[in-house]
Image (cartoon, rainbow, N blue to C red; front, side):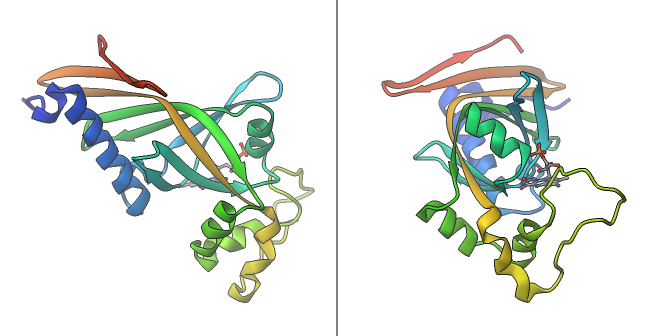
Length: 198
Ligand SMILES: Cc1cc2nc3c(=O)[nH]c(=O)nc-3n(C[C@H](O)[C@H](O)[C@H](O)COP(=O)(O)O)c2cc1C
């Protein structure tokens, strides 16, 4: 039987553990939380989810970052309604994390430039696809995606970094030794933390 880890017996220690997992997720490609699910509200009100790569987590600023194509549906959806939800799960840690927040879109500023500079050539190539992501095709191969690394810079005008300011974080730990769940709301005045029934 797995006992409940000590760090889950305190709201502060559990939040520190979540921050550690997010740090690890942003820096390690094979971390389970490296590829969270991001949900937005569709222009028709339909919730829409997709996997992205977590590129950065900044604990002091309580902010995350991922990258996308500015021509994508999610970019358009977030430009109309910045509310965003992110879902992370690490089976070895037995930990689910749900984050709610607000997205800020960066295309032509220093944050976007720095995110672009720190991207690998292989990642940059994805932004050079024509026609834009999500466009209807007459057949499976009817689009261009340059493979030549020399073409990596072509996609810069389509690149967008999305910063998420975390408004709420909820974790759920399901183990054989007992379950735990807690919610943190981040306000100007400080953190409002509570245990919840799992
Ligand atoms: C492992 C994996 C990682 C992905 N990473 C990203 C990413 O970092 N950014 C992104 O825009 N799409 C990423 N995608 C593709 C999205 O899941 C999605 O299919 C695409 O962005 C179109 O989404 P949209 O039409 O809702 O904008 C990834 C998909 C997978 C399977």
